[in-house]
Amino acid sequence: MLKDGEKGVIRQRSGEKETYAIAPHIPCGIVTPDQLRKLADTAQKYDVPALKITSAARIALIGITEEQVEGVWEDLGMDPGHATGLCVRSIKVCPGITYCRLAQQDSLKMGMELDEAYHGMVLPSKMKIGVSGCKIQCAENCIKDISLYGTKEGWTMMIGGNGSARPRLADILAEELSFEDARAMVAAMMTYYKTYSKRERMGRMIERIGLDTIKSDLKIN
Ligand code: SF4
Image 1 (tube, rainbow, N blue to C red):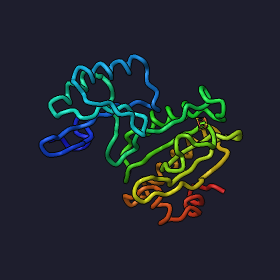
Image 2: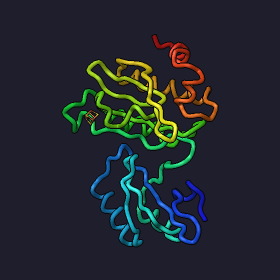
Image 3: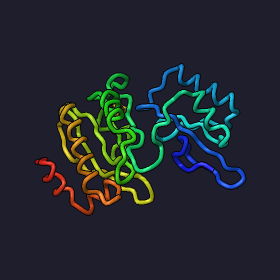
């Protein structure tokens, strides 16, 4: 029996009908036709019962057996990424300025850079990140631990949102940030979280420390 994360699996059913899912890393949910074909061909070859488009914009092959895991990864030739564990999970990103007429900022460029910098980074608790091109927040910024959305004036950064059994809406940390300042603010918040979190999600840390204290520590007016 494999554990969550071992050989890039997510455990599904246990017992006699033990099955696993694997969810290759697809940065910002952007997938090429070749990758889609590879996913479909591999699923067909191993008789995978279903492919699931996940809420984190991955395409998971579900219902596979332990014996199939290594062969499936070898045939896919894709990065397993980090779908489980205490780390930065996949980064949800809206289509942004390249594809959406309402966008104010380039969410895909920002999302790809954040993915490159943070996906899989080990942290005191799991972290979800979202990037949207405008205040409509199609990447569900309000329930992400760290998020950015675009406005005419720049980027608005929010922290402390989460779904789960104890949902919490995010708080605005800073507004009107340039692309570079938004990147720097995310980096500062990551360091702050790594330093001060007591193995709690971002939102619980904010409730314990206080948003005003965090802003003051980060020198935000
Ligand atoms: S958040 Fe705004 S820019 Fe992004 S897809 Fe939604 S409407 Fe378009």
